[in-house]
Length: 430
Image (cartoon, rainbow, N blue to C red; front, side, top):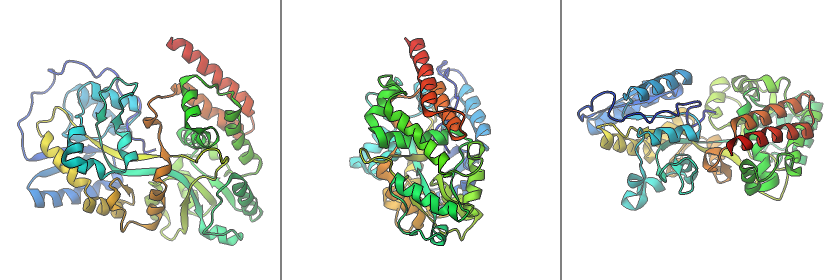
């Protein structure tokens, strides 16, 4: 996903702060490391604008793919040679390790200055990904530690042209699960595949399943499951797993979906080989490059229950942090304020087709991006839940769903296997 922090980062970052390179003198030059290949030219253009306005040189340095970037940041942290501004990719506990080791500056005082002018410019869900609450379980002092430069939501998309072809209303996508299955039957009758997504990348299955868990049982019960208070064999979890049975039996999923990477899935949707896609707002730029004439729209996944609202993953798509040990902290912060101001955010959104993190920058963005933005109020994200599931449990759940899709296991079998692993991990933790 274009995830917000790096996977598998070091937990042993808390070595002597006095080690490493000597502190450099302050200068009117700041260096930023990033991994966003699609935004490098735009960043370079913004750096030229900023130098013209302020006289401060901003050096954007690209390291890609993300694995290379990960190695670069890891080595720099160990050698105390991180740049003035950088991004951390991975889970929340990885982010917390950097904070606790003293590599990331807390930005709360700067966000709250001038009656919270900087803070209030952002979508609250975007800030939440970069914030540690009073009750966080990571041992981090509460506060805001990162600056979102864009936001994302992961929703369903539908092809309006294919809808018209089979007699479906292109302006009224299915809002309920029953309507979704009915639409699938119409599409299949015309030889059109239903839903495509990169479910060979199991985190995307996890995202889809958690959406329906929130819809069927509500946030509290989902969180209580992670805490070990509710079992995965609970009837509500069986209902979640059974949705994948229904999609399988009604031929709602594209052929090979459980081995498909998301880039392949994006290509299939862009080439109009499937009527629905489950993907993030970052896909807007991808689809535009693959098929500029694609006629599609965004929609919330169709609700399987009316007990609780449908929630989708969302929040900050990409964020930058300030190196706490940098001698240029002040000018680094000023640049990030400028980068996330309305005009620069509109420029970024239109050039890269990513949702702006600044709420005031939604004017003038492409219609499809506005549709994603409209559903920001329905977003949630594991990094904001204050607790994380054991990775082996998540993996078992997601791979179990894959086995349901291909008919190898029943929902009850998967639930029992996942719960057994959960109980094992809880026992080890005691």
